[in-house]
Every structure is written in structure tokens, then in C-alpha cells.
Amino acid sequence: MSRIGKRVLEIPKDVEVKLDKNHIEVKGKLGELSYTFSPLISVVVENNEIKTLRSNEEKSTKQLHGTTNANIKNMLIGVSSGYKKEIEIKGVGYKATLKGNTIEIIAGYSHAVNLEVPSNLKIELPKPTNIIISGIDKQAVGEFAANIRDVRRPSPYSGKGIMYKDEVIRRKEGKTAAK
Image 1 (cartoon, rainbow, N blue to C red):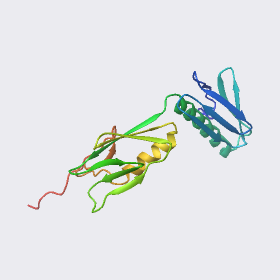
Image 2: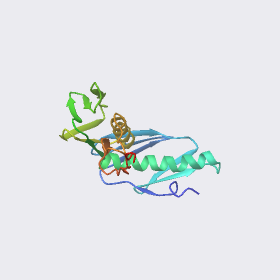
Image 3: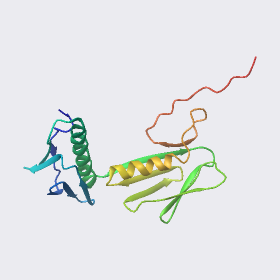
Image 4: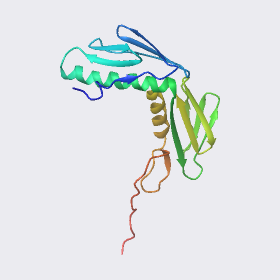
């Protein structure tokens, strides 16, 4: 049995959960999220707890069991406390600026890269080399952070590039001069 799937989720204070067949809506102080899960999985909400149950023992159903439980847990955390990713930009002349609903990144190319900020996310730039992405949807926060990082991935040789704040870049030794 799936360890994650049989985990019992506790509903935090100030969070309201509505269940309708295979559709769940979670409403909290930060916003509202909804999720439609497979009809092979049943969700039970009682006594301020959420349980996920599966209808059969097939491999694909077992996979959906754990995934559904994890997605519901992410929704509960998102509407109550939210998610945040921090990004650092390293390199001479590398920086980011926020212009309305777009973020402009200068990362060593001949042109600036402009990315449209999704409406459900909030972007902060405490410094031109630091970006803080926050929102209630874990998947959206992580995806937009990955899109920003893909503009200029960190180089293992020079250490320049766009990276997550807690990311460790294993440095490599460059070529040595011929003797």
C-alpha cells in the first residue's frame, strides 16, 4: 500500500474544504484552489481530516493514490501559508528588473529576455540580483522559477548563471595549460 496515499491529512485552521464526487475545492486566507482527481480514488472528509482511498489494487491506481494525496496536501499548505522560491543571479552585468507584468532578465546575451509573470504569482526584487517568487500553487511557483533558471543555467566552470538560493553548484576545474 502507498505510504503517501494512506497518510491522513489534517485540515488547518481557517481552511474550508468542499468535496463534490471527484472534485475538491480548498479555500483559505490566501486564496482558493481546486483539483479534479481520478474517479478511481475516493476522498473522505470527516472530523477535520482528509483520507484518500483507492478502488482497486492495480499499479496505475496505486500511483494515482499517492499523487492525489500529495496534491491535496500541497493545496492545504498553499492556501494557509503559501509557497516561496528564491533565485540568485550571479555574473558581471547579470540582473533582473520588473516592468509591469513582465520580468526582464539580462544574463549575458545580446538581448534582454522578457518573461510574462502569471497572474496567480507575486514577484519581488529586493536587489537586482535576487528574485523572490511566491504564490499559493506549488506547481506554478516551481514552474515559473524553473523557467527563470532556464534563461541562463549555472555554469560549473565559472559559477555564473541563474540558480536557486539553496542550490549548490559543484565546481569543475578548467583546462590546464600544456607543459
